Image (tube, rainbow, N blue to C red; front, side):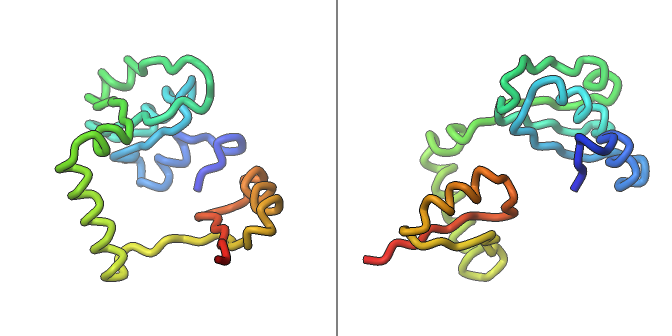
Length: 138
């Protein structure tokens, strides 16, 4: 994990990859940081932008895109959910992966329904790594 408030993103990615850069980056935040992500990619890398959490304008990283022949594309879940064939393939993939144990969900913490306030506070703390589960007793 790279703490971008404390570490140089490009330098850390280059250190981790032995100077090659990352092949793929997925960005849910957008905004000015996109330029750094593009700089951290390898030649012919792919940058998927699938969110705009920063609330700031997301510039197109023209320099790195041209110099490294990058692919930069947007993505929304609707690409899959609005196409019944792709949706079924995705559902089958997840079901099979869960059944075979190849996919295992990471559970950060479990709460009961009467602990919903605590669960929400935990979610707002952004301390979790994995899913927060709330169980409902019937």
